Image (cartoon, rainbow, N blue to C red; front, side, top):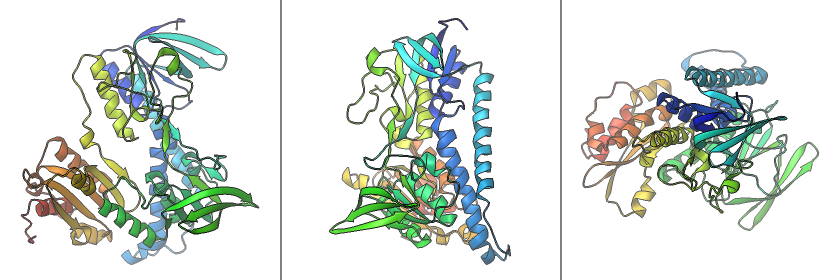
Length: 469
């Protein structure tokens, strides 16, 4: 490679936003390079986020089923034991296979992969440093897709041993007897579920009046009730005021209303959010504007920054920090560079919590509909009424559909129950095409399936349920 090879596009970051954007650029005929500072491609999602956490969620669920649920199906397993080392090794195997697939995907599209730390050296230049080696590349366009990092809390600094981020919570060498979690968001609840199924006592400490604040209120309350029933200790309106070592334990001071308490934990997961990962990129040196409060890169509707040929997507910009949102933005940004009309419909971006039961939603919550003064109808259907759910013994939860009372257009779909993560795709498609609740209600769904609950909820919303309303 020459000292200053020129590309049509340089993508900084190889996560779901970056690698998807790079592939789309190559498909559009652009000479593309993808820079990644870590040894493995795939970014946070594949290496220390979405993929390893879901691998552990599935493994821990299997363990829980074998230990506590198989008997009711007439399956005798005897004494069930846990091999945590093997479970972790499987997780690593899944991660390696998927990150290897990303490399193969990029190489298959003839994308130049460059390992090293990237820094903007001008509006059209990037310097890449790896050890003592440094090279400068030139590009017509530059796309920033470096993702995010966990937010630290003053006084609760990560040591990734006793006070851990989500990354550390994926790599415990033993099941903690008592795991504390600061923050009742999606990540904390998912990782709390993993270790609770494996035998840990789990206490969630949340400052706000409820957990998973972005959820529809009815769904959020149901999730809270189910997690408590499973054994999770959830303390809302509770603030952590300090933490210090106490032998092999961590003594955490908390306040709730007028009461104070000290809790002892083996490990403490701090999961209060994530921040855009922009350090070392040299944004200020080239004039890329950043929001002072959020740290997010400012972009227009085409994902163009204040420097016209530099773009940013994913966790770096406003909106939910979701892998699929970053991928959609990556495609839209690249297509815009190529002169094609492209955009992301933010009203149809699904959000999923991978607890058990799963929670999945798209569109407006009932609280948002009321806040905006939109006239609406609601239809819901419990999984207790779904034959397939009864057969599996997974009857917790329901489907809820909100539709405009005059046009019947679907405004939001919210599901809490088994397989919600997959069922929500139908809801996303419905919203993308501007469907009415009657459209969903009149679509024939297979029987017996979980998705029948979606059809029944739609019947309720369109006021034509065969069971009456």
